[in-house]
Image (cartoon, rainbow, N blue to C red; front, side, top):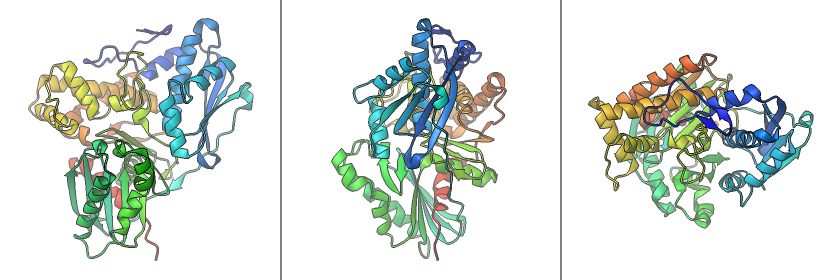
Length: 460
């Protein structure tokens, strides 16, 4: 297929999505003829900067392709690394395009607003005419978790269910899952009461509570909720008043104990590092959304945003639109229950429109348990998506292990996704040595809440 003059061809195409065009394949073809040095840098809190060096064409006939390539690159860097300031280095025409696109009234207004909310700073795009004057990279990692002493609560807040574990000296003595509907509930007291209920249930299974660790979808700074899809329906004023400190308030209901709140993707990666006893782990949880985290070679988190649910992986301009961000080809529509539901419609599987997304997923997974041919095609197609996406992610993350968790990865469907993804990696991305892997079934479902319990350090 041809995208803005770039011919994209892949060996493995999802059977239920023939127009899928992996960004990895688009970029590979684009860079074959791009020779002009070019860089993008994104700056986040504390003066930390991530820099990506690449090339563009810089010619009038390839203007559309250049703009599209850089737009998708900026989008990915913002959601992978995070930032309130974007430096466009080496081409003023592209700077003008990106500055207009990533503005309050531009096509990426969602990204503009989101980054301002996260970092509580004005978002801006900066022109650096000479690529030689690009900002210098500045990264800083932080050690988290792996604290196993004492009586701990581990809580994992998902979009369809909340999971809690009681952990004593590293051993899980109790775990439970409770279905809830946080994304469609406007009353923040619903969320608060559900969190406290789970905390108290775990507390009742131990002689005392020494610490609470929370794994939660969203962006958290100093245990405060900056932005999170779990509270999507909560009005902005109520969010600021009652949601930003919701976990801190909930912990006080248990007692004066340390609490640590970390993005669920990073906890996924931490769970992998604990289980594998090795770093450079990319954790991906496929459930209500796509949660991603990364642990470096020293088992530290990087401070990157890692919100790849909003990062593009499909270059096809007609790719499915994400309702929240308004953008196309975002990971959430491929690596979540939304992705399963999307493909179920294509496959001809009828689902109750009034059912919750979690219940729709269960229907497809039940069909898969009985080796249904249509359900098989769904999970095979997701496996192809994943293989190509992992090949793309490897351009931004140094990985030895790719740990897959989450509701979508449960059962036979998860096994199919894993096998197909690794086949695609081996066949089309031979330079990527990491392979997708999963823990046992129990850890797939509650591993994050157990790993979350290890987050806080108990200060004597």
